[in-house]
Structure formats: structure tokens, C-alpha cells
Image (tube, rainbow, N blue to C red; front, side, top):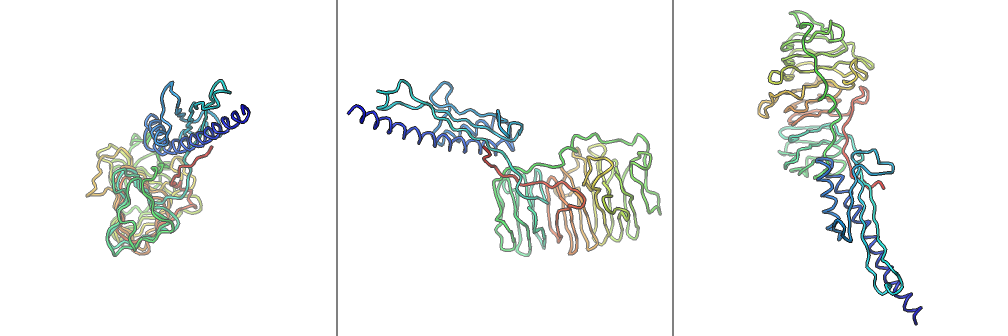
Length: 409
């Protein structure tokens, strides 16, 4: 009878311990996933709090010195993700109680659940609003079937679709907060839109710490009738001071290289032409708008102009590989009602490369035939026209990625 009773007692307790072990593992998985998602837009302390909160909701409440502890390590202490700063390790430990098996065992065991979660790239993003809203409306017809349109705006809605005369074709829409009217019948998506997603990393954030030059070697200004300009690397390291304007009927041909516009903007009027006829193969241009924060200009491309530019796959300054336009993030002249970047595309507009305006309001109002073989990353973005948007593998442009939380260990 003693043997039968002992076997039954141990079997009963062991069964409950195995159930607790499964629960601890589930709590660790959920906690690691929650902490990883939280870490993507806040700090490690908040991520640890999120992990413990989720573990508690799964029945495992952290208490220092108590029967249950939830330890969170950022990054993980060991394993293949030990050097990954976006990975989180959660270890749930709980001492078990002895039931009838206490007659035969001197101490109760502890169950442990361990999980490591991280973010993995999922899909290419060709349009990304970094801090503001992505708004589409009006007589819009945007064709981006191979990529995602996204917004990192934390307030709702991150993305807003308005009007019934629009036509949006994309792989998907991704919003950190809500996606308003994204189920519109005129929005055709390969994969259903996603809300409350982790923020998408900025692939050009390194440019924000780059030291911009100043016109210490004098200025290079375009003289009347001059149809060619030489880049910064070939003109004695001179910058363009003030606005660079191409008026109706004028043609400006750029040579491959970097062009710095200091305290000015780029304006292409209707009937004007801006191109780089020798930008073939891996050759291309980068146009950088910089200067004193309050005087950094914008970009205006008017309808009925001809603009055909491409970025360099391997730029002279490697920080600009694949970047066509960059407006200094320090610019303070940013007004949602008067966008600093106003691109009115035409059938003769071809822009290939990254359009990077991290703190700027961007309005894109194209017409049929406009091609943005590019990645648009900006503070806020408004689409109201017609354009084809694709990625530009041929110019080596870095492409943002949607990110998924995955349990890796």
C-alpha cells in the first residue's frame, strides 16, 4: 500500500509540475515577444516592465525572493542572439509545492521557462513616414504592387485613406497605430493591411550624424545660359549657395557626383529640364540641401517639367550610396500646410534612388507616367496624384523593412 500510495502521489505532483513548466514556457514566450515589440520604440526599462506585466497576466507574477521570478536580459546572455541589441531573453522560474509527494521528497523542484524573441525583417517598404501621417486621397492612383506603404506615427491614425475616386495598389499597408479607411474597396492589397505594428527602422539614419560641409572654398553658382554643373568633388569643393532654379525652357545637365545646396532650395519650373545624361551604369548624383537650420531650402518640381535623375550605386561619398535627395534633418522650416518638398510629377519624371527628408512634410502629386523607382522616407507624406512606385535595385538603394516579432530560441 505504501508503494502504491507513493507512486500515485508522485505521479499526481509530477503531472502538476509538468503543467506548470508548460505555463512558465508560455509566459516566457509571451513576455519576450511583448518586450521585443516594446523595445522597438522605447527603452529597455519599459521593455522589462512589459515582459513582467505579460508574464503576470499569464499567471507568473515576479517577486524578488518570492516563489516566482521573471528575469529579463537585453540583449540575451548567450546563444546566437547574444550580440543582437533588439533581442530580449526572458526566464520565468517558479518553485513548486509538494503535495502528497512530500512524504517521500525532501524539497520541491523549480520549473523554468526560457525564451528569446527578436525582430526579423519581413517585407520591403518603399514609402515610409517616420513621425507623421501617411495620407492618401484626392484623385490618387498609386501603383506599388511589390512593396509596403507605412507610417511610424504613434498617434491614430498613422495612415489615412480618403475619397472614393482613388486607386491604391500595394503589397500591404503597415501602421504603428491605426489605419483609417484602409479597407476601402479601391485599395487593392496582396496582404491585408496591418495595424499596431513595430516601428520600421530608418535605413538612412546614419546621415543625421554626418557633418555637413560649409562654403569655406567659396560658392559655385549657376550662371545664365550655363547648361552644365560640376559636382562638389570636381569643382574645388564648392557648394551651390542660394537657390538652384531651372526656369521654363532651360536645360540643366548634371555630371555624376554630389551637389550641396547651401541655404537654398531646388526649383524646377514647368517647361524646365533637369537631368544627368552621363548617369549610366553605376554612376549617379546626390543632391543635398543643407545650411543654417532656418534657411535650409526645399524642393519644388512643377508639372510639365522634365526631370530624369538617378542615384549612384557607389557614390564618391559612400554615405550617399543609393541616395538621390537628402534634406538635412536639422531644417526647421517644416510646415504641414506649406510642404518643403513639393513634387508634381509629369510623364517625363524619372527619379531613381532614395528620397530622404527625415523631418520634412512631403507632398507628391504626380500624373500618369511618373515613375518613382525609389524609396521615399520622410517626416510626413501626402500622396494626391498618380505614380508608379517600385524599388530600385539597380542603384543599390537601401530599402526599409517591415519587422515581425519572432521567438528565436
